[in-house]
Image (cartoon, rainbow, N blue to C red; front, top):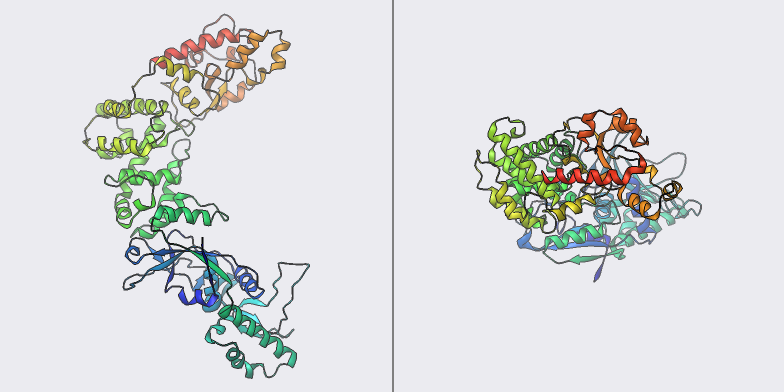
Length: 566
């Protein structure tokens, strides 16, 4: 990796002429104190870090939105202006790492910084020419030089000051000319003060025009996904960047009338607010945008978020939202909550089917044909999830299902059989699969889902259900079991079963609170026959702790029968 040295004046000369910002960059966030510290570091010969540029070929520059650096920063308007590329017949550089520092240099040398402190203030960067360079050993945070953002060059009457506009140094190619420019204004100062002022002017000129204060590495690849990876790694020392954040930045830049970032953030929040709450990520919504725009590739790659594709998504945005809302409302009615929707991608074919029907209120329809489709959807969602149909090459699977669903008409029944065949699964559980399911443990990936299937007639609306140990977990301790006089075989049987499906149920939060760690044989006496039937509690003569082994065997048989009936 070759790093190329660079001067501050080189950077300033190229900014917004040869050097620009890609849409994946965040906005400028530094305050005036950070900018002052950057210039202090340059004057003190401290390293200011390296820069990372991406060389974008001329023929590629129209593929992606490009932005200018902010010269005059305003807290009321922080957005970077777009950089029109029309008429620019050359390669350009986009900054992948160093935006904050380069913007700070530009503001300090050529621009202004407007902020609110009791009132709005429009400030520029000045250097006190009378302050000797002095490092405070007791407070390393204190600046060595007198840099400050000020509204004007008025001096404080209580102490000697002479404020020099830092950007003035750009007007002079020679340091002596910069000193001569200030000669008449410095004439009234003492000899010691003039010497200090001229020394600082000379040093500032040298650090801006002559000294190689930093270096940069140039990435020449035109592969956008590689560039994105470079960008993420280069910025990993700061606030973590999610892939979706970068793609959102691209979408925000390319949507014509809507703010993509706000729209997708707000919609994701609304989606997660349905029912008892979900935790869908922005990634899921972005994937849905590609999936529900029929003609687009669904791979989650930067190259698929082109200007043309994002315009298609923007045109379909309202329809995409309606279909996703209807899908999540539907699965909520089915009893699927945040804990048991373990394969969110399985929702996309359902949303696509609802879109093809053209009915955003499909989830509430009571028409016979709609009710039949809803039953088929629930069953398909269960089996595709339990059989991990969307693990592995999920993009290939989703694309194949979308092609199949494209033929659906507004009155077409849900094509479950064709979807099963495409996934290579059957809508039933065989004995091997049931045996695997019975081994699922407490709070496992699929445990809550399987438990919810044991309650086909339950009303899930507006209720919170807890995964609960039927025989309290606190009773299963090796020392306690041995103290009961159990032999090794019985101890092993208890310890191997207490945390599996045979000893788990879904109960409401109020039921769980009343049950707490009460021994099961006592607590069950407070429940009615309907409760026992609903939770598949076997009809044994004794439900005491000594008969736990018999209980798990009997309940396992009931669970197996229920799963076979799916």
